[in-house]
Length: 118
Length: 112
Image (tube, rainbow over all chains, first blue to last red; front, side, top):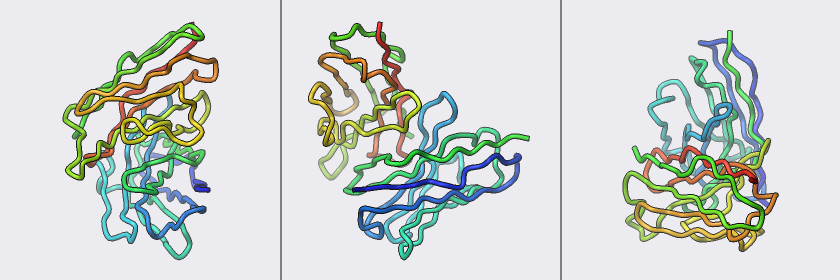
């Protein structure tokens, strides 16, 4: 059964950095693209980053491009999100999204909360 | 970027009655591979989103057959044939055809 566990969320000051992790199990991690999405308090969902199965392609929306970096370690079944120059508008719950099957996106974890505040 | 617009944003429904949520995209979600990547998620209060339907009309395992998805091109609908108390929450549509992938604003379903 597909399972992901997000971690690394914290309270940080504006301008600081934070690294999120997602531990995946129950599927062949190295064969599938992975993603991060986020949900600000009381708001809708927003895509944050995507990475190809082998890490060869990475994509970001304009809202985080140049500040966030997605990466993966296929030997450890782990997905990461390095977030730099954090802003108050980055405050959100961050979810690790699986893509087991072409564009069969799914949210299986509980998310990790990031709060950017002085 | 593709904009997803849901309506209504708030949906009060009487128990046992049907409910319908509309999702419209700013451009056709038909992919060149022949598929249409439109997904519906349910988010119960205090929980993570849960996928209900993928590729417009395919129900996920364990999802009651009271839920159905339909549509094509730019217009999509999620229908609940008979609303139950357990259905309370926010419903999100999402397109996975064009990058950056995008979600609708969410529709909050409540019991009247």
